[in-house]
Length: 489
Image (cartoon, rainbow, N blue to C red; front, side):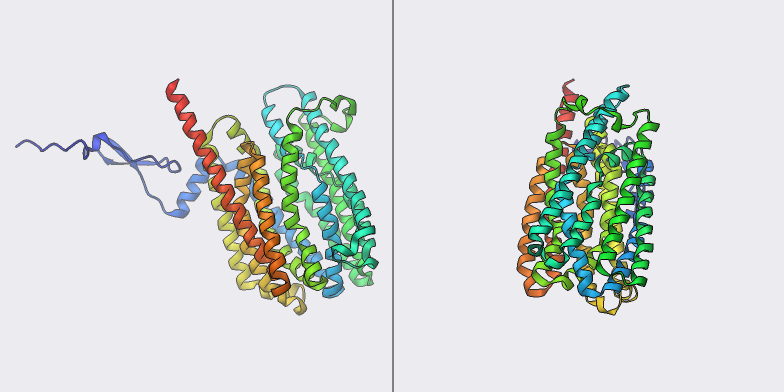
């Protein structure tokens, strides 16, 4: 008896399931074709991370994660010491003065590390140390100008308009003292140098030095009753030591690579510059400025609308939650050079999968942090900061929800910058900033500082959704164009 033939629609030899881009293992199903083997979610995620060639990046992320958690713990010790020594009101004054200086510094800061990494990635393969040295000197020049502008603007605004930003006229000198740290805060060029050299452990662990010094000085201030000015000098000196050490290690890394010290490059030789450097940097810097308005100036908003004590509570909650957000920022720093190379070389599939895998990993870390804080956050505040700061607990839980969304958006921002879409990042940041301030100005006078935390959730949600939509759409379009070009050739 003849075997019945299958119709073309049912003929298994004519059809095979679409391949899973993340799971390359295959097992036999029927003679003539194969199908992917389903895996459990956790095993699948681990296999995918390995399959994207992220082993080295995961090690670097591990260094930075370990370093950031330990560093966050050290910073929380000094924060707790200051909060206990000064009390809620005076601690709030200290936070407002620090936030004032940091806001101006972030607005003025020239984020040269982003264009430096992008231009250095494009220059790979060119055996010209002099060109690389000029590139890093070019970035350093703008870092120095931005630091000088930040210090001078801080002094001027603190002198003439300090009370308008939430702290009293008798405490204006606090912001003037802190301007000394802003004057030597060159972060762009050193960050790019160390990241391109793969010195992620160095980046992570050098933060310890200034923060450990800050803890010991804070203990001395508490013991001696140095008060507000003593703690402000402590924060300033510790940041200056950290900045000098960070810059020195970056110069040493460049020298070891044969590039040399960018300080030896004559300023006159930088006149021509690097075409496209400034346009990319300015767009990225405006985007950073918009983010700064919601990451540093938010404490000033709370102080102006609800008073120094509320600002202190809000800052403590944000300081604890920031540990998770720093993980996202450092992971972005690790993957950015590789992501930029993938996009530049047209490796769209790996570019997309790497970004998605890192997002999944950061989301899992964020949820784990939220669970831990939900269970132990109230006890942590009572033990570390004192019972008078117990009201910060609901602010902390709310802020962590915003942090999870921000951690998810970090790799999306990296992808858009690698795609040379800083304008999209800028527009999204502007929309997010408007959203935050609209929510914060409406809610803080009505429900207190937690209104600003709810504003942070709204901000992070807008950014995460918009960035995902744009970079995934652009990657899909690029993949289609790549396949079309391949088929025509």
